[in-house]
Length: 250
Image (tube, rainbow, N blue to C red; front, side):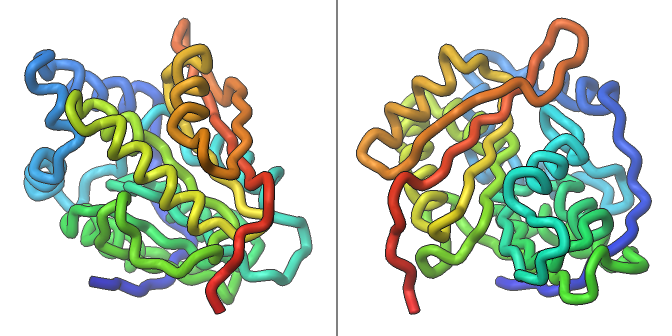
């Protein structure tokens, strides 16, 4: 299913306190239940009982922190190129809304999630928007499995993962394989200058090694940096670019 809308100025305000409070909902899961974070049923139940008028929810860092990285690494000031960006496993993040309202470059953003209800919330919020950051900016809401994405090769400038791999890896049996498939799909979608931005609270000593292991047969080169912190908690951005040009579909 595909929803198409247009986005601009929006009204949601986020705080770290809200993020931490929401994270407590998941921290209450027992060791036996933590694997539910990797299942569609868990998220479908969560989004089905969410009020469509409630605030958006963003994992780890504020969307503004991610947008700064996108602007400095991917978008070229004054460029008239249409940039295609995916928020993979978007949930009810406000990243897409802020991209549409704050960025002056033309953007085609794709919000992808395997739960229809989450995308329904995204669409409802987008309909409240007044003006877009650029007249040619557009939004697309796509129901899909992140391990099997319905897109042609080499068409995205950037794929953002803010918490999706962190959820998939909680599957103790199939988690690593799911992450491998998702990363392979993300790489497949990148154009020759494409970039993956992954946000996590997992330290580079653990996460970067995992990313390099899971993509060792691919053409990705990973780097890491601390993107934000709150008290003693640090949040990291893992960046990957293609080492070689991959062929695109015509």
